[in-house]
Length: 498
Image 1 (cartoon, rainbow, N blue to C red):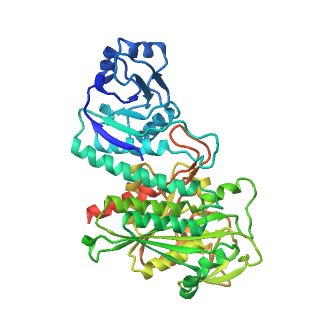
Image 2: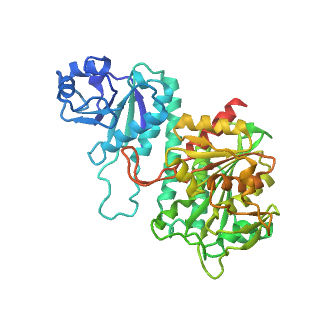
Image 3: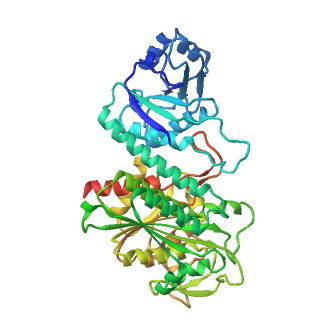
């Protein structure tokens, strides 16, 4: 874990291995901190600007070595783009990119200067989150390509920020960043390692570490309860399915509303009998991204201790073809009693979620948020910039939008008009699991709406945001942990307002 501290040191006294200084467009060596650095370094900052090496544009940077007039000796000037409209997402990405720039450069300790544009507590939290996310890489099984060094200590330097508020923000950023990386670590694992049983084991270890209750239902118990939709998905695999149930019940919450976070936990998705194309099928190990996000969110909630009752549920299974696998045209009976015509076995996520949502309601949930890598249609509609958001309760939807803007995990609301529900009417059963091929993200949500009933419910389709296809300056290629901070922030905000 990265050790994170704060300091009010003067520029000349900062003695970490590297001092990171954000530089925004329009700034010059005559402005504020840059002017002080220019005097301290004998005009070096002026020469960097005059040479055209640095202009503040995003992702342009200069690393100065052996700066003899400074205790830090190395100075990273990192372009942050326009200072107008700075938000948590841009600050996170700036910090993550700066930290990744220092990878394998022998920097064990780093100071990050909170300049006037990012001197408030929210910005400090975003810096911490971005730095922690930027530090992680997905090369878990590389034999000869391990990082030569990682940043072990991060010191946020600001002479103007309020120390007490800053400490609180830094702790929140640390908890949320580490919980997100925990979820990412689950998503990076290959399918032969991160099986439903292994995912349940990781949830149990986290719960024990954080003082949470964790119950894991096996196939026998799920069959006894009547979870025919969930069990239909796992039929084709030799790996047994599990329903992971994690509970956070603070003593002060009393009998307040119970919030359920439900995450799709398909640890590998071949598509089943409706098998996927071979191209990029290996990436379907991340189809448990929603489940990983719920487990990560529960870790963050346990550490940040909101006064709210929360239950996290992850229906975990593999979706594989075999002689036992569910077939197109089969009809299965869900825990709710509703019958489902399985038209496409690659639309399996909504099947496991339907039983988990019904089970959450049976446990007393009054608010349900589910997160799932549910549809390719969502990727087509929104790409990797935003997740889709749909639901039955506008207050809940608005709260999730706000939480997403706070942490940079942005969402976009899509409609749930009755016409979309007509697309998944079945002639043989109560409902079918896919529609006509259009509005796929919405009909997927409409399917889940059937099982939410009268409970306040919202659905996050994170198919485009849970995995990044290529490495970016601020984050490694692969699992992103999207949804951890969104769901945790939502719970924190609701607890604070109640």
